[in-house]
Length: 238
Image (tube, rainbow, N blue to C red):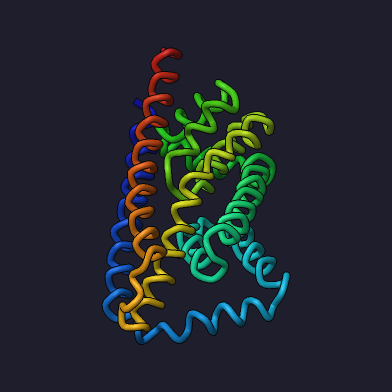
């Protein structure tokens, strides 16, 4: 199936990110007391920037997305510095805008080199083409396969998928964007608890860790459903 290479590439990269995140959280739980004092300092520094803080954060995401900088890092920063919900809004908004920009770049400025690259990656090309031909619904499901979405944005642009399909379908990045920010929030909380000698494993800490398990399970389920939907669409076209 054409989606297999894309799905395997994305899932493999996301699994590595999850493993690294788990190692990070465990490390912070054990040695986080060395860093605990920096968390409130970072929060105060961001607060002092006022509206410039989120703006600088968003500009960094938008500026680095075209060169395929890992979104995951920005998600962790957003959750750790801005908190879960504000971090998610800033992160998702910036990544969405960045991917629409990458789509335009792939369509208008770098179409020829992107198409040449897709010739070497025919399965990724075919998956994007099928999703684009089926409209925003299938682009949405394709976006739900977790990974840096800029690669797909370049492909959708070079293949000249309709802007409406891309604009609506790109909303499918929402679930794994939330995962990234959630991990950052958990990492910050674990660090703060380590700084207090783990004397505060109250409802919030336990709830965050249980939520992390639930988020991981939901992400795996969503990814599985997305792959099935895309494969079914490809089978219909054959």
